[in-house]
Image (cartoon, rainbow, N blue to C red; front, top):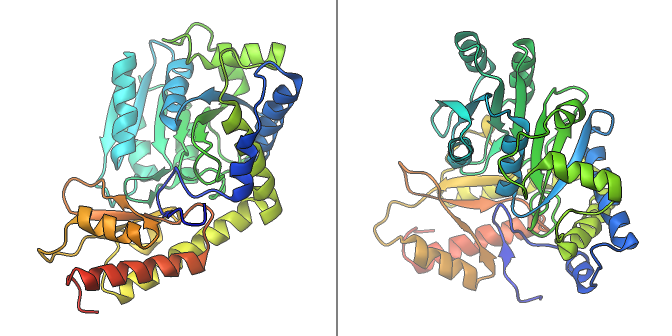
Length: 368
């Protein structure tokens, strides 16, 4: 494994040897030991946002998008209406989920480098009383932009509406306290800031809302109400669980706590982000977002304008030096992205910057 490239992506990401080792054990999906593993994972996840008193943690097989779809389908009544706040590809995807599920929705879109503001949401909710839920991407992975969750959440509460948060790229690294930020659902996944492997999403669903959600779901497999009821009664997943993924996440959470929990994870990622931004600036690569709205999760960089630069060639050359980058996801300008998360520290980020500099010299794109 020592020759494997470091994944500087927003997940899947580079995991520790201990996390990978945890997947070498096979588990019986109905076995008491595995049920205890699931319960422990859910308990630890709830503790990260101090949500045990107010929310249930409902795990679900599949990627984070499965869990987002399950949350919308379960918690938004069929006659509900979702206001989707968009400033990137994942907001667009959430709107598409509403459309596919046949839920009424409206969208409010800002530029990809422009956070949604609490004032925007206040105005929109005042103008449309039929909205029942607001859906927000906390950290929009297509750019790395951070939307102002605490301020937006308070506005939504004041209007008597319910908030659904896609916290896929932020949960576990950026502070979210369920006792201070009112939300009906918050959605995340195993393969992001917790540094597990992909394959399991989870929804923190407000207890009374989940209890009232029977019959809302469009799907048997994605019915979080049914999933929670069955797990509460039996301790088991309804359908075959991703046993190795759960075991890996349990081990990753142990390391998360050993490292110092959320404050330590946030600090390491912030250091990674600063090392990356400072290093790339020195070699003449500009970040897409201003620092004040840049989350320390993934950074979007403007691609060099030199005609000799081609992303595919650049990507393969950087990969040969031991780092996997991520293509850009913007429609108007050419970019590429570099993740700050995973089992990597500032020294690893500096090595990645050095590799990028070497590659751009080899490509004769930058005279550095």
